Image (cartoon, rainbow, N blue to C red):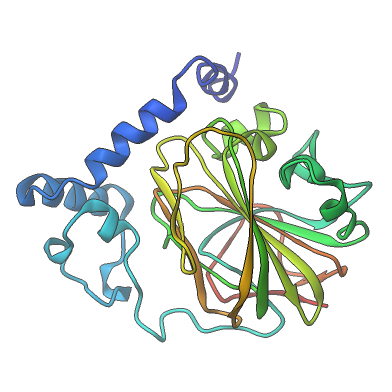
Length: 278
């Protein structure tokens, strides 16, 4: 048995939510000596480039989470043409949505309807469209930005597990992104409907949005749909949310996208980088 398979199997009995909340409490610790030790150790381990940050001094952050979701200098991530990457990370998979299915990894597909919380009407909007999945590693910038300009129509919170979303787990846990806790954000754009799904993962303490603040964790009381009487308009490149520790973004578009020829699964991308066009 491979180490990747073993790593995936041992995650099943782990109390995902309890572990994540414990780590989340540590990441919010305000003891100066402790949070400074955590931040400096993290920078060394993952070779974080603090020169990109608006605040380059690691000790200036009040908590580890404040450091982890740090803002970058305004010109650190130029916004490209067409479809822009919403985050720094690895472009895990991308392409056409086929028969309502998205590619998770070689040999694994999962249902768009299940990803969106079981809403068949919402999933039907994307039949014949395109998708892209970006994995954010611990060393990446963890604010999520708009890939296209759009108006938020609805937000759906879907409870679930908190499996790791790294490459090893993606290859071995079926329906991974449709099993994990997630926040589904539906937008209207000039290119038609767009959905951006912020997927939770093990030790991800919370997911935040710019329009509603911290959303997860919520009590596990089923799927919750939230509509907005006052439109929330966000332009391409604007921040829409952030992860407190790393995870994954899955995007789906009603219109088929033409992805840049140079891209391939596993490519590193930066927020704002052009992924293709419509």
